[in-house]
Structures are given as structure tokens and as C-alpha cells.
Image 1 (cartoon, helix red, strand yellow):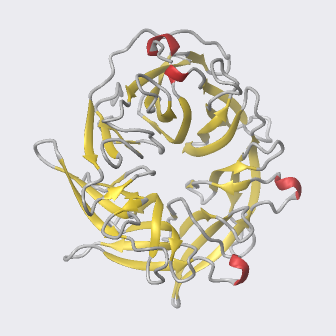
Image 2 (image 1 turned 135 degrees about the vertical axis):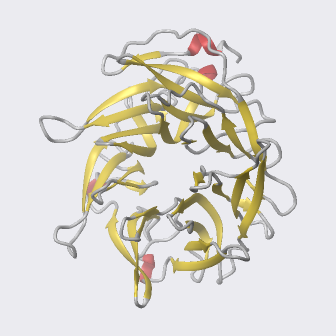
Image 3 (image 1 turned 180 degrees about the horizontal axis):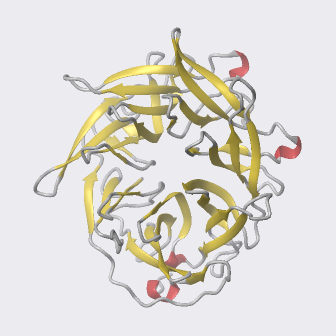
Amino acid sequence: MRCSVAGMALLMVVGAGLAGKSPAQQQPAFQLIHAFGAPGDGISPSSGVVFDSNGNLYGTTGAGGAYGYGTVYELSPQKDGTWIETVLHSFPNPKSTDDGSEPSGGVAIDSAGNLYGTTHEGGANGAGTIFELTPGGSGRTETILYNFCSQAGCADGGGPATAPVLGLEGNLYGSAESGFGAGEIYELASSPLGWEESVLYTFCSQPRCIDGSAPGQVVRDGVGNLYGPTEEGGSAGGGVVFILTPPKPAGGEWKERVLHSFVGGTDGVDPTAVTLQGEVLYGTTVVGGDAPGCTGGCGTVFVLTPNPAGGRPRETILHRFGDFAGGQYPVGGLAFDKAGNVYGTASFGGAPCGCGLVYELKRAGDALQYEILHDFTGSDGIEPSAGLTIDSEGNLYGTTIGGSGGGVVFEILAARVTTK
């Protein structure tokens, strides 16, 4: 089905639920930074990218590389506007016990330029690792900081699929599958004996998994609270957004609290990511929303705002995905510019091939107007499956799993971002 993209644009008034058509917009300039798939290169980047202080981009691919099981890569901008890729590390077969295999969550970067990431498989126990890549004169040196399933019954978790988050004290925080499949949140702290892992919370610890199950990427606020989504669990089984609060004084138990349980219908189902803006949480659900053109709805963008009366935050649906031409199944975290506009990706739908798209929720007074910034056509990318990164000039950067051989890294130039 090929429909008018402009005809599907929606005007969502925050808190009022009103919708209207937006005028057709000229899509901003698109640049393909790198196409994966050459011999020795990575394949299928399923996570986003991060910047260092010099403007270089870093990310992971889940396959490809020298051994076929994934890479960590760097993209460096050149004066002529092109980018040069360097494969920083190639991961071996999952049967290797000396290294991890199949990274899937991207990387985090600290102020010294060290990169931190996870592998879903491999390592000493075959259940994945946490690794560090340290810069040096002869390239990056990899160190395995932790091998999952080092405890009986995999009580310490296994199969991580998201990048760790850096704490101010140098600790790492993240999510992983547990030995029983419900998932956990971990902390990795450096000690005189090396890096030691602590399980901060195990999901499905409450009856009927009302605390959530299968956690995704976590984010951290300035006082140490951790926030994240779970794909399943909650009061209706549609997933939750949670907060994990550190103990005071230190040394006690972390406390989990559900901020929102997704119930389907006009609400979303299966939250994929959350992004913290001050005290406000924004996020996406891959399905749900009950929008026209897609039975049950094909995803939402939502916001959770603090409740002045106390209790759980208030949820507002900013956009419901429905019709194929307008994009379906949003994934990954959201990016924000200085004017309050919101940017994200939909992994499916759009014109002309249904290969996914990049969208903007453009602020117009008290309203947010949905606009499509770029429709992928196949040769320039297929299936964006991660959030976007925005630079100080308002340019957007992201990845697609497929297209142009083995997936791509792309840039959308000055995507109507106000930088005043």
C-alpha cells in the first residue's frame, strides 16, 4: 500500500488528544556516512552511536568483522565532509572463552575516551561479558571486566543486550537476563581485587511479575537513580517503566518502584526505551496505541510527568503510530533539540518501500506536530532499530540494520533544529 506521507502526518496536542494533518514538508538533507559489509567490516548495527569530545562516532555491529561475530567501530570526520571507519575490535566465535561475542547494545564512553560495552554471548561461561577498550599508541586494548554466569544458577545474570551506563564514581550499571529469564539490574564496581558485580534488583520478584520482566536499557539521573523499561510484566503484562533508587545510607538494598504499567488499548505495549529530560521521562512503545490503520496500534511516543499530588507520574501519549505510510513500530530512545523538538525512528513503514523512517515531533506552541524527516528507500538503509544522537549543531545520527550491503550509519543535516 502506497499512501501520501503528508496525508498521514498528525498534530498531537499534548494532554488534549487532538489531531490534525500537517502540511507537506521538504525532507532535510540526508547523508550516508558509512555502509557496512566490506571484507573484515562489521554487519548489522542494531544499536546507536555515541560521540567523543573530538567529534568521532563509536558503535557496535552484531555480526561481521574479522571473525564474523561482531565489531566495535569508530567513524572519524574528515575536512572534506567524508568519514573514515576504523574497526577497533573484532569479536570471535561464541565458543571462545577468552573474549565475548556478538555485541548488540552499543558502547558508553568516559572522559578519558575509554569505551565500555557488553556482548550477548561468549566469555568464560558462554553467557556474555562486559568489556573495556582503552586507547593507546598502537590502537585499542580490550579488557574483559566481567564474565556473566560466574555464580551458581547464573544468579549474576547473563546475555546482556544493552550498553552499560557510567556512574559518577566510575561504576557501571546495566541490565541483563537472569538465570530464570526475568532479568536483572547490575552494578559493576572496581575494587583492589578487580571488578566485582552486584545484582541490584531481580525482576519478577513480586507476584504476577507486577514489577516488570525483561528489562531494557537503563538511564541514570544526577543523584544516582536508575530508570528503564521492561518489555513484559506489570499489572496488564504490557511492560512497565520503573525507577530503581539507591539505598541511604549506602550498603542497603536498592528499591524498585513501577512508575507506569502499560495496559494496551489506547496505551502502548512493550516499551523499548526511555530518555530522561530533567524530571520528565519520554519513551516509545513498539506496539499498542490503538491508532487507525493498524489493528491494536503500531506503537506510541509517550511522556511521564511528575504528579503534583504525589504517587505515580502522569502519562500522556504524544503520538500513536498506525497507518503504514506514517511509520510503524518505533524503537529506541529519543533525541531532543534546544527548542524542545523530539526526534526518533520507526523501524517499519513509510514510503516507498516500508523500510522505516526518521520522524520529528515538532513543537508548535503547546502542540507537537508529527513530521517525517526521512523515508528509507533500501539502498540508503533498511530498518532503523535504535535511537538517534544529536550534536550541538542539530545534526542527527543513527543506524539501520540492513540496506546498502550490511547496514548503514547515517546523518540528517540540520533537521529543523533550533540552536539559538
